[in-house]
Length: 137
Ligand code: 5GP
Ligand code: ZN
Image 1 (tube, rainbow, N blue to C red):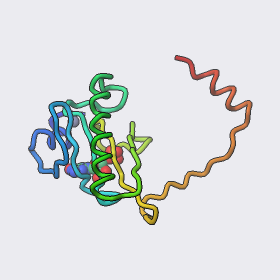
Image 2 (image 1 turned 180 degrees about the vertical axis):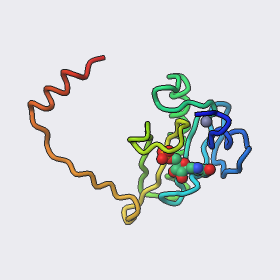
Image 3 (image 1 turned 120 degrees about the horizontal axis):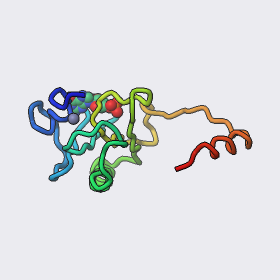
C-alpha cells in the first residue's frame, strides 16, 4: 500500500475531512463514515502500519490507552449499554483499509444492527489436542 494513497494517512494529514473525537501525538480517533451504530469510532496510529503484525509494541500500547479512554467516554456520554472492540487483520478477516485501526462499536440491548450470531459447536478433544501441538512460539 502506497502511504500517499492511504485514506487514513490522508485523514491524519487533514488532506480529507473527518470528525475527530480525540488526538494526541501518536494517535487519532474519528467517527466512522459508515457507522454500524451511532458513535462508531475508529482509532488509528498516525504512523502507517498495515496490520497488528506491523505496529511496534510501544505504539500498540499507546493506541490501546486511547481505545480505552475513548470507549469509556463514549459509554458515558452516549449512554450506551456496551460496546464491541473490533480489529480486522488482512482481507480474509474483512480488513478493507490497510492502515491498522481499531473499531469502537457502541451497542445497546435493543439494537438489531450488529448481532453476532456465529455458529459454534464444542470441539472434539483430539482436534483441540492436534491444533495445540501446532501452536508453538
Ligand atoms: P475495515 O473493514 O477495514 O476494518 O474498516 C474500515 C472502516 O473505515 C469502515 O468501517 C469504513 O466505514 C471506514 N472508513 C472508510 N473510509 C473512511 C473515510 O474516508 N472516513 C471515515 N471517517 N471512515 C472511513
Ligand atoms: Zn496509512
